[in-house]
Amino acid sequence: MQNRTEPQKLPIRIAFLLFQRFSNLCLANCLEPMRAANGFAATPAYVWRYLTPDGGPVVSSSDLPVLPDGDANGMGRVDRLFVLASYDHLAHDTPATRRMLARAAAQAGLVVGMDSAAWLMASAGLLRGCRATIHRDLLDAFAERFLDVEVQEAPHLRDGDRITCAGAMAAFDLTRSMIRDDLGARLALDVDGLFLTDRPTPQPAPARGDPLVSRAAQIMRANLETVLPLPVLATRLGTTPRTLTRRCQASLGTSPAALYRHLRLSAAHQMIQSSAASVAEIAVRCGYDDPTALTRAFRARFGTTPQALRRGMAP
Image 1 (cartoon, rainbow, N blue to C red):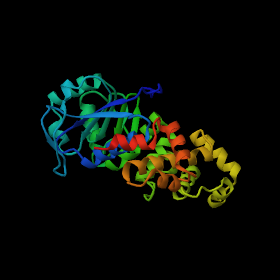
Image 2 (cartoon, rainbow, N blue to C red; image 1 turned 90 degrees about the vertical axis):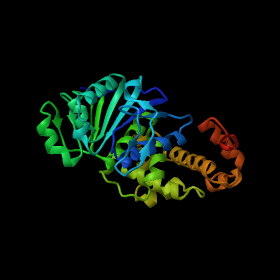
Image 3 (cartoon, rainbow, N blue to C red; image 1 turned 180 degrees about the vertical axis):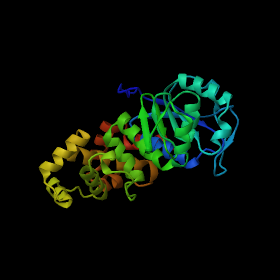
């Protein structure tokens, strides 16, 4: 199988298929980055529904009850189907489950198996001839049971229109890479700024792009109010303006100045949504001389004004 590279039409329709005792952390690490990306995008990029095999409620492994929107058999066409199973995968592996997954997969552009869901997908014949991974505790048994699957230990693997993910901690990195492919590297950096600023990177830095550019973005976020000139920024990074410009262009397809503006506007968008600060105050905090300058740039980026966005959020 070859990976698909066609542009994805927005909004991307997603179904989360939840099995009893699924991992709530795994679901959150998929869902929250998408929710954040919707907040940064000019229009929502992701829409989703929660399904269960029979349409009945399920309980996560941490006893969180979930009332679904429907059952898998009534799913209809979706762009991505996330299958979430963690514990009791052997009990879930029934002929009815195999038939249900096969029907659902035929309605999905991409099927993503989280945690132990790769076992259920393989049993349904959805991973035949594919490279796939699974939670580390199941890796050996998975390889012995499914000889038609090329089993590899990895955080997540994609083979054509199938993705398998080893667990909850890898789920964020998988979703973040999807966001980068769907919406661009700059918006993916916005998502990183919400979730990863103080978290050590669990994978080698190239998985998120150029580490120099990532460090530049961190410094920019820490200096929104007083914008650092390019030579000062480069000095703090221990590099030259020319090198930083070249690396930023190669990694993000933009200049350091344009990245800085992008991050300042993203911060303004978040402040409008999450604080009671005036537009004038937000303008100053995000490095704009006056609210008019912020409003002009905000409208060009988001297609609306800060004032209109805030009015639209009012109850």
